Length: 230
Length: 224
Image (tube, rainbow over all chains, first blue to last red; front, side, top):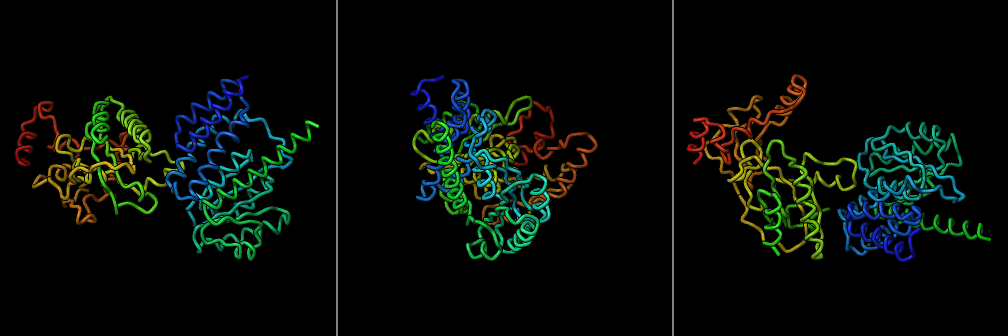
């Protein structure tokens, strides 16, 4: 096991690799993490995700724009791909599996992919249907995978209406399922009217929401660990 | 710093390096990165052109970042990785536009970037940045002149023979459908879509002694 200093140094390196959108360094640091036998969970949450949280702040402060945000996400994935196989299943007390996709007629999937990334990071099992997904496919996939969360995305007002049908179908089969919708034309009003449980306005908001979500997951994990320690 | 980066890239295997100011020419998403380092590598058989370009790009990115500037590296069109986030932005950008703006060359009748020294035998990559680079003198119009070799040799008759100029960017130079159709047919027959006659025949940058072809010499004269 590595010393505390070495661990802190590697976490810092991972964090900076994401902020500096440096894929090579992210890969290098992730391999080092594995080489010294550090906890992969720790490296993801306190390294890669800390970096992404910082990026979210910079984006809000308009220091970073869309290209930087996307490159940072690529750097995060570069590290995550290496670390993920070594993650022990987290004992979060929530069963995480989610179906996600951009609805029929719509090919805009940057926001969806960022939300997906945060689910990936959080250790959810993600079933990504991609973009321009036929409406029936969502229900089919939800039943097949028995997922407890379905996320729908649309960027255009013309395709947004398709989400209503998906939500109705899902509710008919399974009233307890959680449904999140997102995309430029979506608002709280729309979410209420369509009967969705949550909504995210665009990629940035989705990122913020997803970070909050992961923050609360992390808290739950800490609590679970504290309980175990007692 | 301007010359330093260029010299370094040239030393490391770039055939041409130019700087461009692209203010007002870019989509909103990338408009804040309005300076470009345009890098061209000479295509040679049996050489890892893409590998060289990738290395050069990384070097430029490291240099610029080390000085505190932002960068966005755009890979050559033939090397777009589809599953990354940033690849969504590649469609917003045109390497030839950066190269003509940087004064590396013009767009020939074949629709390819033609540099005076290397002709159409360059593979291009670009690094966008906000570093205050001093731009080269842009090319505003084609220097193909009366030469129509590429049009005459095109097996699919895709090249219209029209001339490019920056002021009139929507002129159809190449009927892309026909070029693509020819390559698809070729792929079915020969297994590979190879064509590239428009590159081979272009007199600019052509190494005449390698061909021993009197015709080529004549073409060069007609262009000159």
